[in-house]
Length: 65
Length: 471
Image (cartoon, rainbow over the protein chains, first blue to last red):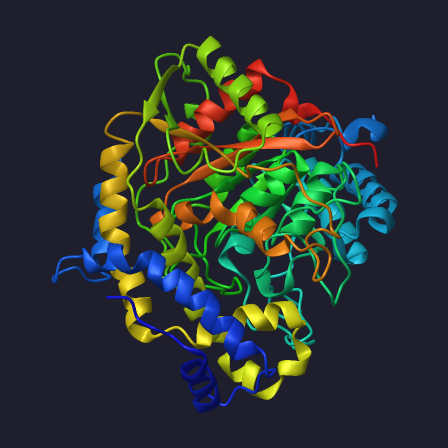
C-alpha cells in the first residue's frame, strides 16, 4: 500500500510539531514524499510480518567475510 | 626539504618525523604556510590554532629527542571537519546554530589520533550540519575545488577534501552519512574511506543520522587510509554502536597481492545516467585491475536498489529532523534556507514509513550480499556518473536541473550507507577539463582490509592519486 501524503497532511503535521514554514513548503514536501513513497511501497509490501529493525545488525554481523 | 614536505603522504611524513629526518616543528611550519597560501583561494579552513599546534609540535620534538615515540602519527599535524568535539572548544558544525558554546568532551576519534601522536592544527570547512553533498555553505562561504575553483568540492566533508588535495594537510577526518567522505574524496582527486557501520566510534561526533553516520578518513592514498583506520577503529565504551569486531592489521594486509581477487561490475543501477567521459575512465580502471591479475565478474544487483536509495533518504531525513526539531521550532532563522528545507521534509515523514525503511535494511543487506558477495570479493562502482558540476549549477536558482544534479551526486553513495558496507573512493582518471574522476571499491561488512588492499594495489600500478592541483 502506498501511503498518500498530501499538502493538507503536511501542513497539519508541521503545525502540530510547532514548526513554521513558508506557504509553498507543504506543497513541495508533499510532492516529493508522494513520489518517494510510491517508489518504496512495493519493497515494503514484500517484507515478511516478522521483519523488524533489529535484524539489520544481525545481518551485518552474519555477512562478514 | 621544506618545500617538498607538504607533497609527502601521511605515511611518508610520519616515517620522516619518526627517523628525525625532519622535525614536527618543520612539518608544521610547512603545512601552516601552505594552508595560509591556499585558504584565500579555496576557503577550506575554518580556524587555525597556530599557537597550540606550535607548542604541541615542540613537545613532540622534545619527546622524540628523549626517545619517546607516542605512536604511528607522532608529530604529524592534521586538521579535521569541524564536527569532532574537543572539550573546552566550540564546534560550529558549519552552522550558526551551534554558536560558541565549548564542548564538554573530546570525540573518541580525536582522542585516538592524539594518542597516536597526531597534532591538531585547526578545523575545516563543512556543509552546514553535514547536510549537503556539494560544499556550499551560506554562513562560511562556499568551499572551492582545488582543481578548478568554479567547481564544487563535494560534501559534506568539503574542507577535508579540498585541503588534503591542495596539500594543506596530509589527511583529515570526514564523516559519511550519504557520501560525505567519498564525494569530496572523488571530486577532489584523493582517497576516502567510508567504513562499515560501527567500525569507528562516533562518540563526540556531531550526529546527523544515527543509523547511517560513519566516521572516516580522507587522505592521499589507500595506504594512508589503512594507517588511519588502524588508529581509529575498535570498540568504545562511549559509543554502544561501535562494533566489538577485532581490528586487523590493515597495513600488513596491503602487502598481499591483488592477483586472483574477484572484482564485480554491476549490470544495473550504477550504469544509469553515465556520462561517456566518466564511463571511459571507469573502464580504464577495470583494465588496470585486470592487469593486476583480478578477475572481472559481471554481477546482477537486486531489483530493490532504487528503493534502497529512497529508504536511506528517509532514514536520514527522519533522524536529522528529530535531532533538529527543537532548533527548527525556536531558531529557524539561523539555518540557511536550503538546509532548513531539507530538515523540514523529515518532519512530515510518517513514522510507519521510517520504521519500514529500517525493517527493509536487514533484508536488503542479505539480498545484496547474496547477489554480490557470493560471487565476488569487491564491487567496483562509480562515485558520481557525471562530470563535477560547478558551484553555480548546484546553487539555488543556478540551473533548472539543480535538483536532478544533486540527486545524481548522491545516487551511487547512499545505498552503501543504508547497507552499512565499507567503500573506498579513489581517483581513477581525469577528464579533459582537468577534473578528477573517482571510483568506489565496496567490500563485505568489516572487510575494509580487502578494499584497502585492492586500492593500494591499484595505486601502485597507477599515478592518479599522486597528481597535485596547481593552486
